[in-house]
Length: 351
Ligand code: OGA
Ligand code: NI
Image 1: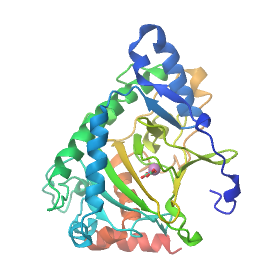
Image 2: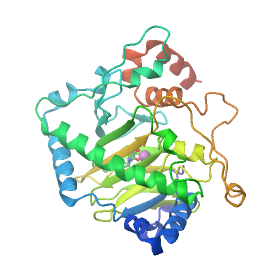
Image 3: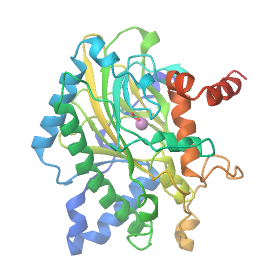
């Protein structure tokens, strides 16, 4: 992370490959597509996806409902504040989410799989509380239908990609299905970045890696997303109708670092500009642990190894890691619903 040298940002759509998912279904293009997919995900961890088949009218509907949501009066948004939800669902006002302990300048709503909360006893692991219902704004009933439809549509695209990744790694197409075949998990975030020219407010979202399997991002036409490369931060300018796809830490872990979860961030738009984005995060089912794919020798020798500590026994367990990440990012939820873990968090972070 090099906040100290903003001059190192370079521009170029050309820096990120553009992949066309239709090629996966064309027998004579398939091998080239898989090779390109594997390379993009290994060398950069980010690429654009076109030919994904999501109809233009679905983009229009989700964009429109997102703008209507953020235009609701503050009281209506705060009424579904995430602090109400032990399942980490709902609205987060600007400055209330932390990345590396610093506040992000964005407001957002987090929407997960719509499932009832589990009935839990004292002996149950704490991560089981992540499952539960979403919070919906009373004044915008369309949000529920449009958001759940968008999530269901993008889940299918994400799963097609996951299976393509397995094949790009010379594994059976279903080699990674164990990550998603138990209780489904995912996160949809509608996000709004308000502009500012105050240099102290540059962090739209701070540099981070995504925690899940894969992310499909739909950004509006304003730009601001940046990806870390060896030469510095590069811009990821919007391409109309294309998703920006990136690898999450789970896929990095499953491939021993062959596929890369790359650092990225969003720079606050200039004063007077508002940027909207919509992130769909395919998450692993909380039960179980991340498998390690048996890569063939010629691929295994290119794997970088995961960056976190493989000696940590909790490392591959999905549920405990998922709750840890959520507690760190959303202190108000932690304090209200997880007081014991909150106390431990503070000790850790105040070191
Ligand atoms: C994220 C993220 C990028 C964006 O929410 O994890 O990286 O453009 N968002 O909003
Ligand atoms: Ni991200």
